[in-house]
Every structure is written in structure tokens, then in C-alpha cells.
Image (cartoon, rainbow, N blue to C red; front, side, top):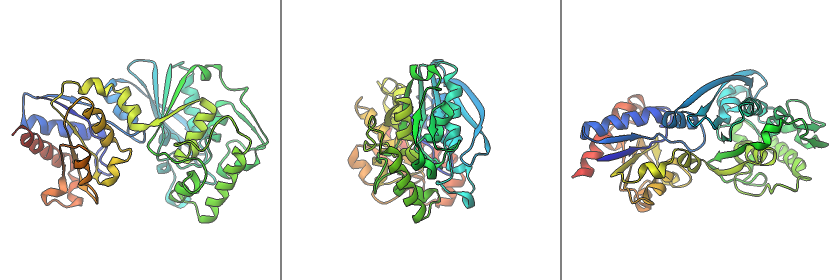
Length: 368
């Protein structure tokens, strides 16, 4: 048998690379002669860099940049094995995890550090830069990022934060490095929110980043004033509100193409080619439920595999409401560690061992 192992991370338990290795051990326990292709995946958020480097090789780098609160942080990024593609996770530089819970306030956070990472990568003259969106602490529409790239915003402090946007008087990108305009940018996101309005960046996600109701409206008004005179980018398009408006900022200042994160990852991994001729695909994530069918990595793996006629089994830590919908969507089977009478706490604590057992039994059942 040839089996492709393509899990996402299992939150609070295993990253995608470790999960793939655990599943592979289970496959080999069931069939020592199986040909196993490890292909960990991600949806464009945290773990994207690890997944792509694991599958394609390359060089991991670390840079000291400005964090979301203006303090210095160490951010990892990478150059893939082709030598032409750079991968950056915005969360490495401006992630919510970098801000202590008591200091979370998206009116004051900045994406300046993301721009510093992009500028450093630009100096290598890559053909393509993939920027994974997700898990950000900001709501500055990428203005801080653009400042680090050389864009001048008259009337704004450096670095600017979400509360400052409404004061901009002019925009001048004359100081941006010429190499920036020769690079293809891809913004990988897993949400489709527009920039403004009830489903926009501020009103949907700012509360999760620590904003009070009053601060949410402050951010919304500042963003409205900022975009009022910008006519060359449609802020209403899906994905513009991703990561506190970083989707909008990357489109505006880097001409980025906004794409569903799992699709970016699967194309970069050449997943369709790798799954061709396989007998089975194993995928999974920490929890399977009805939301697994809305832009999640597992569903992206299913769609790509079904196009090649390859069955897919989902293996999760636990299952939630609506998980039965995965079978209707086309999964050959769905199993969770907690289906075996194991508590969620135990499933998290010894996730690798339990996933190995789950994969072994799933493969044995599939072969019957």
C-alpha cells in the first residue's frame, strides 16, 4: 500500500510534523511494507512554515523585529528548498501569543515587525513570498507593515497602530525598495471576512484580541476614515479583513493575491501530484466537527484527494457537534481518540501514542 499522511496540527498537543510522524508509525505497525509519504499540512496560520520546510526542505532563519507592542521579538521565517520561495508567518512577528493577556489592546498594536521580516526577505530577491495570516494581535490594516517597507503616511506616528489610522493625510511609497515590486506575494488566509462592517476585521475579531466594545467602534471608525480615499483596492472583497486587515494591507501595498491558506499549502507541496496513485490518505486535526468543512486543512486535503479518486480517513483527538457531516462530505471514515473511551485530558497528554494506535487500527480496518 502507498499511504499519504497529511495531518494539520493537533492544538495543545502536537504540531503537524509530530502528528504526521505518529500517524506514520501507526501505518507501519499495521503494514510494515507500506510506502508512507509524510506530508504535514497547515491552513496558512501557525505551523505553515514547519509544514513546508518539513516537506520541501530549505533553510530556517530567525530575525529580531518589532513585536506588536513595540518590543523586540525573535521571529522565524524560511527559504524553501527551491531557493526561490520565502515563507513568513505573520504570527511570528505580530501574533497574539506575543502579547500577555493583561496587555492585549488592538488599538495600540502594530504590524511593523511583519514589514521588517518582508523587507529582510526582499533583500534575497526571491520570486515569491508566502505570508501566512492568522493569530495576529493587530488591527492596523497592515499600515505598520507598510511603514517598515518604506511607505510614508503623513500624519501618523511610526510605528502606527490601529487607533491612528484615521489621521493619515497622504501616502507615499517612493522609499520602498525596488525589489519589492518584482516579487509575487501570496497572502494565505483561512477566513473570508471583508475589511469593514458587522463581519469585518474590527467587529468580528478585535474583541478576541482584547478590545472593549468602545475600542471596537474606535477601530472601525479609524479604518473607515483610512480607506475612504483609497479607490484602487476593493475593501469589500473576501479576505480583506483577515488578521486585523493584513489581507487588505498586503493587497494594497504588495499587490498580494489572497488565497485560502490550505490551498496555498497544498499547491506549494504539489499535493495533487503526491497523492496520485495512492491507496489511502490519512489526515486529521485536534477536533473534528461541522466547522471542519469550512476552510479547514482536513477538508482541503479531502477535496484534493477526491479529485484523484483516493479515499481519505480523518483521525482526530476528539469530535464535536456535526462531525457526522464529514462522512456525508466524502470522508471514508472518521475516528477520534476519545471514541475509544479515553478522556480529552488523556488524549492531549499522550496524543502521539494514541494517534499511532488510531492510525494502526484505521489502516487494519481499511485493508479488511
